Length: 354
Image: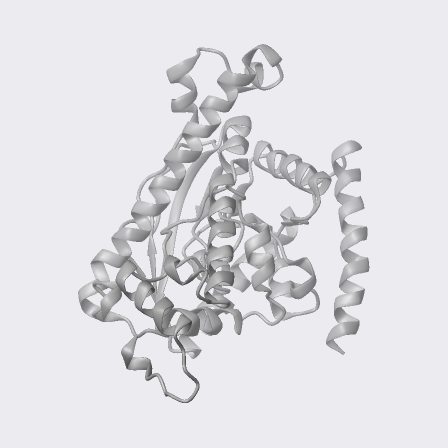
């Protein structure tokens, strides 16, 4: 039954992507705005009731409602760690916003899919450059028409044991520059059934633009003479946004580390991380770890690092006298080599001799 649903979702998604192109190319009316205003009070109440029935609570570390400039659209740029991110963050927002999301197929004909359908949702195909391009154009158009946006710049759940925030795509800051929007960074974390949301002020990418030029972003965006300048501005804005999201997330961790006793990695059980990742992926049937890796921002240095780790893991799985020196000190290696070269099957060599 699930396979039939996914096959149908594939067909519907292809049709949806073509409709997206038509809306942009033919300048057709954007969908879902009136529906969102009608459904929003109902879905907000429903989300609160679901939170209460699940015995969950939402806490705010700093500002629940950030004061933003009037008559400018807002992009809520959020960290991404688990399935209910959208719903829990939405509870705190007074006005509806359109959502940029992926995984259309797994959401199709589900409760999550129904919820996405109550407001404008731009589903993106992360494996299609063309669809990414039209998704961005659609996003900018919604913003220019005065609609707020909810987006997850990491694009995937952050399942890294090392990075506070993954490398982020530049589409968020580019769209803000192009549409005169401000960005409200939001970090979210979960401890058992308690959700902590941290947001503090807003980021205006136009302030970065003004540091370098008195021209508008529109002027430099379509002029090849300003290509390098444009990229410099976008990269600086992207770095600022990622640093802000990392700070917001760290503040949550710092505020609750003593409460949960997780002040260092040594405090965690050895199998903590794989169990944690497994528990997250089980919340979203159909979620693939391969998609998580492939759909996140592909930093060249990160790709090289993963290749090195893969090679090391391969070596570990095929240890022999020729590569043992990579994983042990010289004295132990020489002792192991001597024992192997002088091995006598009639005499047992105990492992502890190594």
